[in-house]
Image 1: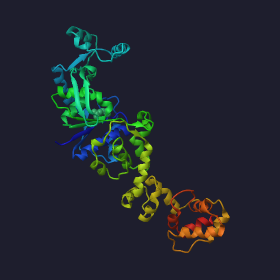
Image 2: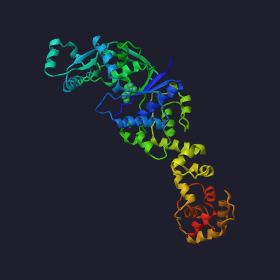
Image 3: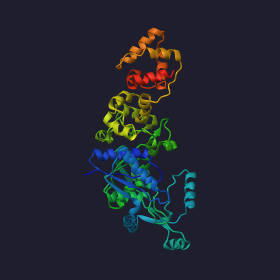
Image 4: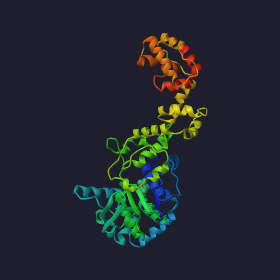
Length: 445
Ligand code: GLU
């Protein structure tokens, strides 16, 4: 059996960490199984769907290194839905309902007040043809509900294990709106059947939906796929992540300079699993090591600082061949391998290198706190050629001469040479700045 999966976002907002995690885990599972990955746009809600969000979905997936084998949009599939709808109506599994929103809300309230679950009472099933005709004359058009069988619904979830619902505990879901348009639930099940989806991976907020979907698959004569419901992420404090979604859209991360896509993938692939979260530079390594057996049912905590930590680690480990195209894109094509290797342990993002390039090549504005000491230092510069030993020789001599030590000795030199009070190790930076620029900067005193 070829594994066939889909990632099915609704283009009603920009992709955020939560849905990208679903996209990634689904993708890793597909690639691990030499499977097929469908990108499906769930755009049945015509009012809320936006083209810029469809673009964002494609761009974000591509940026993160995920490709797809097929692409589909629900809005293009109305004819396929119509056929199945006709079948379900003929079989009596879809029935027309005429209640207004207000009537339904009131019914729910009455049930809740009586301490009962707000399950739809199926009043519409009892309507006679005359009553229905009367509603139609009044100008009411029906919405349509799926008639659930009141039997146990059972599946073996790849993450949750044994899952069981009773059909009688659930409301018959509305599958067709008053304007005749089908809802996500029905479209999704029909798509999953037509595209031969073997595994459905999604957030656990869909578990109850899945119970009704299982019966829809069966009503349409299909075997339900295997399901995996991922626990939703919480924030650091265990609260709902959605509160801070603004800050967590992939688009925001993409637009921030120097965030490595693999920092995001490294975190999201392993969060909530028994595998270690580590900086992994190649998405293939993640897919090769992927298995649903590593996933736990508990709520993983998402901390965006982890992305920055992994980002820094990826940069520290990045070899020059990998960094080169990124540097060129930043317009820094003169940076060579030596410079990269010296500076990279100090970078949290590749883009930070701009500052260090500036420090080495100038111009910099030296900070001169102690003119006397700096002029003294100028006279004591060691002979050329300069090596990684030069700094030590220079500062040792200065220590002896002036009696200064520690911060008092090093900081004025760093400030004079770089204009900053932190940065790469001076022993390595000094030869990069070189004798000529060093003298120039010290002379500014
Ligand atoms: N469009 C649905 C969502 O974004 C898809 C859920 C599913 O995977 O079936 O929640």
